[in-house]
Image 1: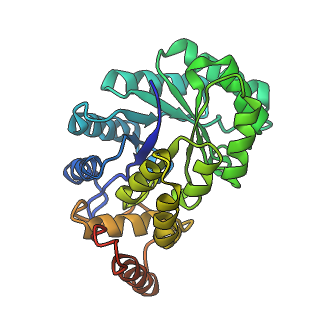
Image 2: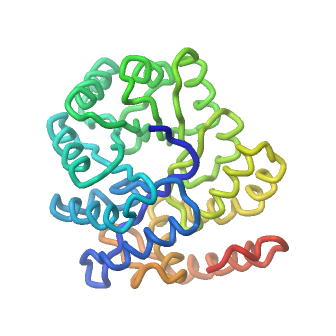
Length: 304
């Protein structure tokens, strides 16, 4: 399976009372596919996966796979603190219909490189499907050096795709590709797209991230890969304020859901506690940045 382009990390919609909203989730799937994404990622950090129980995890993935109906591949987050649990989540994801799994290193005291490699190798031996290695130290508590990520790719053929979220991501992208020069490695930038252009210049294959306007990322990546670098850069520089604003630690998911609510995909912008909620000032700032971006000449196709 070849990974490239834009894989949108899906939010998990909730009702105002905090229950799963499968109907809104199906609408988000349709919206993102209609906007041209190459794939979808379920049960990611920005999908509030840590606030879902096991039954809800399964339900979310079932809705996404059913609604996507084979139109794009689905990557399922299956990170767990134990290798056995990670294998169990991954087997379940495959049974439901996911095309690949996304896994961070297990959180544990004094984690080391050998333990990380053993974790991914055990998963690859147990579940025959591609593994996206998620490099996101705030979640795993462990920073993977470029040499380690290259080692994983070299020793575990199923784990040759990386979702990179450890800044500076453009610099780290280049170092990983240097270390794995004799191995084909596919790197997706994360971090809300705020370094997408620089990641592409450094050799990234695309973006795997949450962002309420995936069509912007799709056009940037498509233009860049077609050799129209100036066109990609122009669009990136004019729209990165939206990415930056949405990618605010602690409140970014609330902003993304508010925008998707305005776009008609979510019935409610609700998040689950203890997630942060938007205040009046943040709402006013969102209105201002949306107005500024969508009013620019040539960006009329960006609609809320």
